Image (tube, rainbow, N blue to C red; front, top):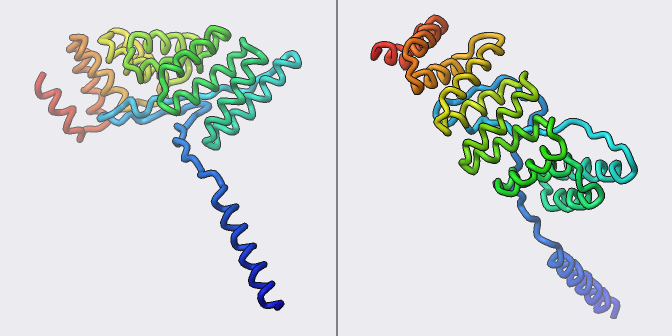
Length: 252
């Protein structure tokens, strides 16, 4: 008799465990988010696909002033933590709640822009970053990311405008001049590309051959043959074995 009762109990337990396992929701695989940098350092631009190294940035610490703003900032901080873990939908819900509490909070719109950008939803990321810059017109990081969003949508003229604002507000971050130059070249604004690359080279602690080659190409595209040749010659002084540069000089 006890053996039969024991078998019944074990069977019931097994059924319960199977049922519970089947009720567990499947884990949704979130898209990995792009690497985000606080202070991007000097980057190396691969010649074959330079825009792969355009850098999405994040903001610094937020300081609220009243109760609602502090609560909104708390929600934004929690959302950023979720974003870092790849939990995009949970983060988005918190940011929407933060905006309801403080509709003019630029940090909430900025964080939303980062979520949309990470999901390749560039139209919405443009709208979010534009709100961030509307409510904080000195937010150079938001202007940089707005430029990246326009660039991804192939709206190169708007990208140039956004990158120009980012570099004007904070002229010390080198990567932004690369972003500006790449967008300007796509927009056939060779003079703006040249200006950005010249500034980049002026800011460099030491010569960067990759950036010098970009500048040489911009000079060539703008018909400035003398400067094109001068930069190529400077590159050969740094790397006498650069075959590509030797070929370009030989054609002059």
